[in-house]
Structure formats: structure tokens, C-alpha cells
Image 1: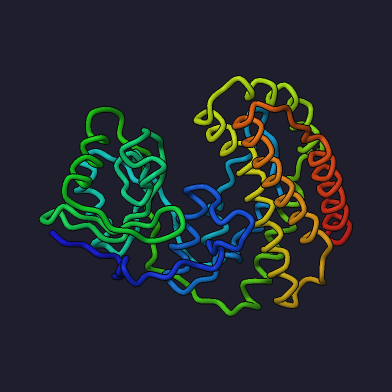
Image 2: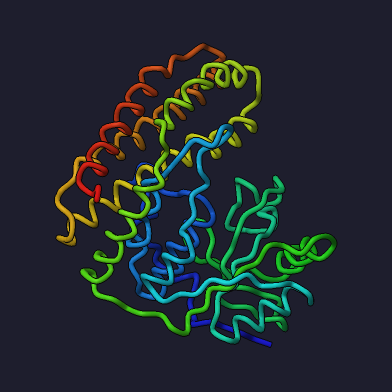
Length: 322
């Protein structure tokens, strides 16, 4: 049984510019990265759905694991996202949904994904989400969106991937229904996205989230100094990468909105870029501290980020308050 939603070739697939290496944060998180490439593969502009990033927050032990809300995806592109109840073998249900022209989004173990070689593949068990665009039950192979691109796997990797999901709780799985996709003009998308921006400005944190992060950062840096690099990677992903990548995406979105001529040029785009750059610099400084066991001072970078967030919010709220 061979099922394909719309047909792609991993060997010729070209990733979206949001994943180009020149960006401050070429990768964000598995869910956002997946949607960037899924939308791109259908000729849809993924930048349009990033209004929600302006409401980034510090959650206490992580920054917001930011994800495009299903309602925004439907309003912009006509894509309906629903949960898939897994009650048969996972691969069988994925094949049926793909045959219907849908893309299942399923949580899997990156230990079995060859595109994570050198990071997780056959090294570390870690949860991630892939979007399955093609699946062949006879040849035991899939084509899937993950991270910054589109990939294929088969054989033993296929068996291991689905064996890993068959022995316990069914993995959380969604389906992206693509049968009513709407290809809007850039101006039409921008008008909708501007309204979404105004909505998310009503949900921004009441207190500067960088200030909350700063309050506990000194003790966390002290704690990290006694840990190994594997702990640093987990910490950095949950904190600095989510903060920095979300801020860069907000900057890109605001610049896109301005370029579409539905919103004036904004200083907020520059301020979010400042946060993204400072977060990356912090990540390097902390990593160097752990490698050399020499203390580091990230307070100036945190102060820069905190001030940038205040200026960004002042600009956005001041212009969009109703």
C-alpha cells in the first residue's frame, strides 16, 4: 500500500528561506519548523502565520514552546487541523490519512530519524514531531517533514520507528486537512495577519518576560557550571533557543507586514532582532563557560534584551491599541 499526499522528492526538495543558514536561528522547534516546510511545499507563505510570536513569554523553567494556532492556519490558508485518535496500528492509520490527501503530524522518537544523525539518531531518545507526506507499507518507507526540510527513511529505521510507538501509549497525532487550501494574495494574507497581530497584542505578558528570566538566570548559570554539555543542550533548547528563535520570527513577521504595505515600518522588528541576537550570544557565552569552566557575565545581554522587549511592546501597542 503506497500513499502520497501530494508527491515530493527528498533529493530535490529545497527548504524555505526561513531555514537558511544565514539566519540567527536557522531552526526553531520541531513543530514550527515542520509547518514552515509543509506550507512552503504547498506554495503558501509561512511567514504570514507568525503573528502569535509577539506574545512570547517566560514560563518559569522555559520560554514558550511557540506553535502556530490551528485557528490562524485555517483563517489564512484554509487548512483544518484535527486530532487523530489512534486505535489501530499507527502506520496503518497514517497510510489511510495520507491516502486521503492529508498530512498526519505525529510525535515520534528522534532516535530513529536518520535526518538527526550526529544529534539524536541512534544516540539519544527524544520526542519530536514529523509530518508524514508519503508512506508505503509494502516497502516500509515514509517521506516526512522534519526540522529544516523534507526527508525519507525506510527499512530498519521504519520498523524501529513504528515499533517504538506500538508498546505503550499511542503518540499524540494530528491531521492537517488540505482539501480546502486557499491561495490568497500577499495583500490578502497581510490584512488577515494584521488582525491576528492585534489579537495577540491583547495577550502579551503584563510583566516583561526577560525580567522574569533574569531573576533566575544567575542561579541557573551557576548550576550549569557543574553540569555536562548534554544538560546544557537541553537547557539551551528550552530557554535561549525558544526565546531567540521566537523573537527572530516576530522580527521577520513584522518586517513582512510592513513590506506588504498594510502596516507602517516598525521599530519593533528591529527590537525583536536585538533580542534574537542577544539570546544567541548568551548561548555561546554559557557554552564557552561550560567548556572552559571559567565564569561568565551575561547580565549586560539580559539588560539589552529586557530594554528591547519594552521598546518593541511600546511601539506595537502604541500603534495598534484600539
